[in-house]
Image 1 (cartoon, rainbow, N blue to C red):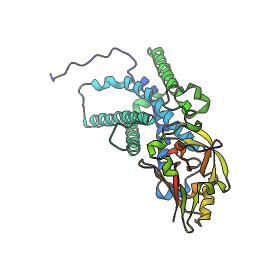
Image 2: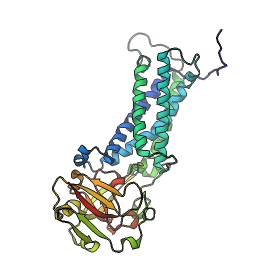
Image 3: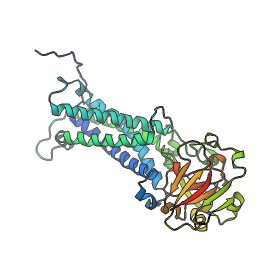
Image 4: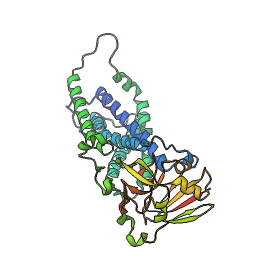
Length: 377
């Protein structure tokens, strides 16, 4: 007889294909929403060169919605993934551990799926807290892991398709088989659903205003912050001081370059717009911004209609001291070089003396402490 190590005996029920499929359907939906909205966020932050000038600026709340869904679905996926792993983990102790080449490949794909999904959700949760205890760049690795997780998930679904299909629906004809575990399964699914609902309702208020009163576990409360809006990077963290902006001027570099002082900027025609700050961590909040339209500044510099604009900040260090406005953003009438928020001059933390605010744009690209606009051919 071959060697067989002592293995645990699992006496609990519901470690079966039906329960795994029921939980898997909800988990798959959450992961799909999280993946699609994550791809949207990635390409809005770092679009391919051909898309820079045509990124959509409408609806103005588009990024607020997509990123709110991204974070909410990612948080909801955590209890779903844990429940799914609970239903299937006894299979890890099957013997022999590998029965064939096909079985070995199946187990390898599951290992990749579980590892990538756990790491994806773990790093995503820490990103909502702005805590990065790892040496690699978060956004690039998070994006790559998403493709690995989705690819391994699709492979797993393909391998397990017959089992999933058999457990997906109840028979449509003939006597229905007795399901002795049915009541327990319904209780288990209800408990998992309650956990998903609890973590969602107590976090989604950071992006969904009507649920703000239930925002108990989210890392941000959008009403808290200078001028009624949170900030991710303060003026002190960016190295912005009163001395640094004491002789501030806006430099617009183009066919007809020019400079403007803050008082000269304020003397130009001012426009107001209600636009959200929507950050990758999932929080968002509308603000009433007032300033000069970017398109007016570009026209004064003789910029062509399809020109892109490089926006340069006074910020020292960090990853977003320079951003780029494609033509669709630069020419949009709602894209402002904002000088005030809620009728008051910008605070230092919100980008005094001037910042970018544009519709349907990630918060990290709404550059603060703007000192230079460069027309790009």
